[in-house]
Image (tube, rainbow, N blue to C red; front, side, top):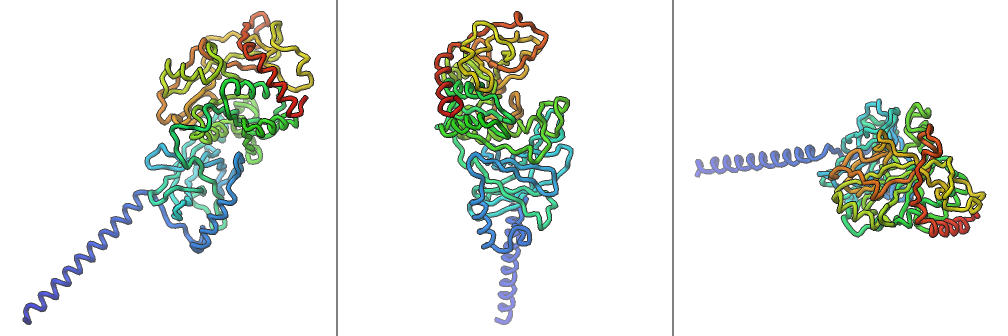
Length: 458
């Protein structure tokens, strides 16, 4: 008996030691897995709130302060030149990420950290990946995506903040609401949405009204305008279309943060950012409508994509998908109709809209010949937004599952661009007549008259 008791004691000690080692090993592996999954750390009390109760209260306050529908208030990242615009849940990456659309100083080197507030009361800080868009037209600032990895322990992030890696205690970051929480593949609210990018010092009321009415004839049910400034009459029209539900105006205060350019090249206008932040606005519009619209068209306000064999985009897109396949973006040839040239065979009586500021597209039906050297320039696109990661003014920069872009035969559809003359060496007799717009003129004139009267312009 005296010999067996020490043996039993040793065996128990050995078993306890083994169990302890197993427990340590399991704990180590779990910690290692968490660290590999995402470089996360609990939010330090000294920087993000001292107690769980305070953090929950903070989350509630952030929810209440979330930007209202249509509003865009930019956020600066302390200790950097970075400007945050909006945040969207990216369902197409594995693992999922939050995409923060930003404007950055391209020459600045910054390490970012993302603060994620999750709906399951999990809160994380993780490293961020900066992706600067390749199109910036030579300006110092450019559009970028700050990609925030979502750990598996975060069910769904409701808000995100971005800070520089060396942020100080007094620099508590502000939060953006994370949009696009729900992924959709069908049954969209809209079939066609038009993104009109940046509006500044705008007074071309008549052409804007004509474009909005034409969009509706073509099958568009939603139009987005990113507005910096406009005339009082333009504002009346914006208010009118907003009340009707066809238009959503996004306040665009980029000029309050940066020295923006009025040109598309630094040589065309001083400033640090291309054309009032046009590329950033287009990308925000793309993601804003990712799961709201089947197709998105990226337009300027003086451009119309007109089918040649059918009347509407609703009829056109099935033709394009049949001819060029579905998983493509569709590029439409630019045709310039000089608005400083008015020749016979116009579609309206000049006195009809006298006193209304702006261009009458029905009075400018002669276009510049399309030069072979410039045929593939300044085109615009219609695209399934879920196939695209980033866009520029003319086309797609980066795709997700896009099978390239198709150049649409001009005899099927092309773009009508009523603007100042581009080929200034041409004489009026070298312009080419195109009366396609007249097939819409009767209903267009009636619709424009109704809008101008009901908005108080006439």
